[in-house]
Length: 208
Image (tube, rainbow, N blue to C red; front, side, top):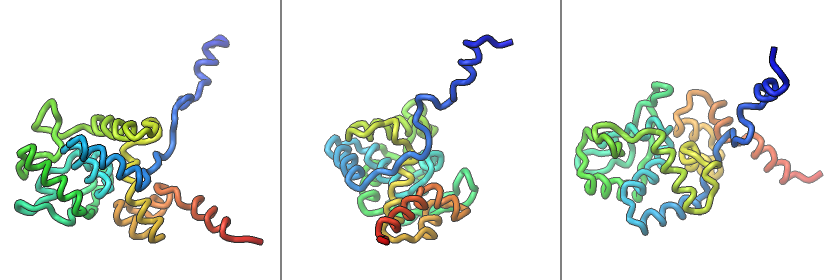
């Protein structure tokens, strides 16, 4: 039979004192704040990783496994790429903008990477890729540098950033679904958390 103290311990919620739920996306000015800091500090790898994370909108497990040949054609960086998602086993395409192509090319040349190399290799074992845990730590360091709370942000913040901006500007949820590689539209709605926000926006514009 449990005594009172044991019951109290077992009744404590698992998430007590922890922040749970969706990680917010970065705002445009926050994206540029991080990007400029990385440029000024000449952190070549981090800049390429950050830019590609924002552009690709990939889950961390897919991002860290990208190889050089996934984003290159010969000696140039492609404007569009396609990968097979680990979670859904479905292909997803993403754009690679000019600034991202420039930072990727600089990183590939600096690190002397070849086609079969991982874009972002482990610093311990160069034959394998950066771990998702290492990537998560890097993301938290980025947001900390611009005075955001690292507990509030994570790798999904970068995945959601451009998708959220695209939705806000176009209201095209189907396009965002394709860009995120979601199989169901409902997943995209939940992921972006747009239902309540959009309902409130409509309500604010309506006077009775």
